[in-house]
Amino acid sequence: MNIGDVMFQLFVFIIFAAVVFAAVTGFKYAKNRKAQLDRIEKKLNSLSEDHD
Figure 1 (cartoon, rainbow, N blue to C red):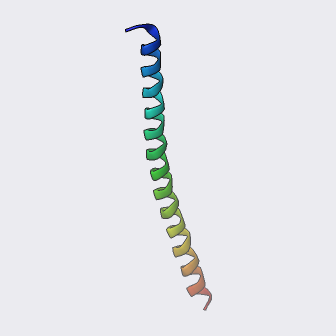
Figure 2 (cartoon, rainbow, N blue to C red):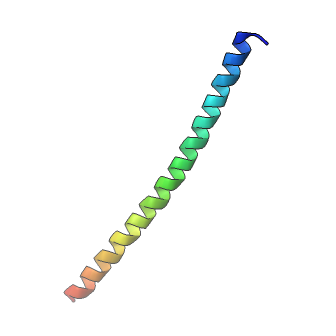
Figure 3 (spheres, rainbow, N blue to C red):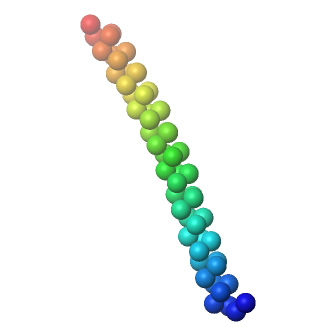
């Protein structure tokens, strides 16, 4: 195996790891975003009820 093969395999592995990392980070971000929006909605609902 020559150095070119090793570099190519390393490059492919890094790309694969980056895709997996991006997917996991994206799912975590979406989950946190939804939780944040739920909290904001709950707060707005409570403010709206207090106003009535």
